Image (tube, rainbow, N blue to C red):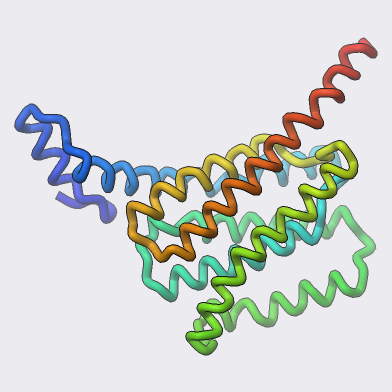
Amino acid sequence: MEYLGIDLSCAVGSLRHGHFPEKDCLLPLISKLLGYAIVAASTTVKLPQIMKILKHKSVRGLSMISFELEVIGYTIALAYCLHKGLSFSAYGELLFLLIQAIILVAVIYYYSRPLSTITCIRALLYSAIAPTIFAGQIDPFLFEALYASQHAIFLFARIPQIWQNFSNKSTGELSFLTSFMNFAGSMVRVFTTIQENAPNSVLLGYAIGVATNFTILSQIILYQKPQVEKEKKTK
């Protein structure tokens, strides 16, 4: 019995005989279910951030380079997973995250006008190179090197934002909900990646995501407390 790539025969068979499924049967099933849950949740993960910017018409406190690097990281990660032929449940959220990340960068560009020449050049370079990466029309060794570098890209995508938060002692227009979902998603992906026997390089990427997303989430909680207290005093 298989549905959406999920083998239910083991679990259903155990339950029919009045037994709770064993670990070797249950963990792969949980992994698949969580994988698809993450894919479903990823369709809206960046919407709170986008909506917050649109509502306030401001990108105060947001690091543009951080969000640009995030787009590059998602592009490389998605192209690599497609190239490796991994199960959609193991990487599907990358597709939705990339689409939302591109929209988010476009919104940031809109509220950051006029854009500098270097920013326009970065956008044009991405538009020119991304199709080649998705088509897999690059040397296999270079592809592996690119994927290895995407871990560093995601790390450095978070560092400017983390540093800006620390310097300003404020997280500006960063969305708590989006940051929380990023952290939770990374945690779940560590588990599903282990269960799917994905390459260690994939696991490393999600582990880095856990650490950096937790840092940003902690900063939002830490730096918003004084603001809340200040608002209470003025009432």
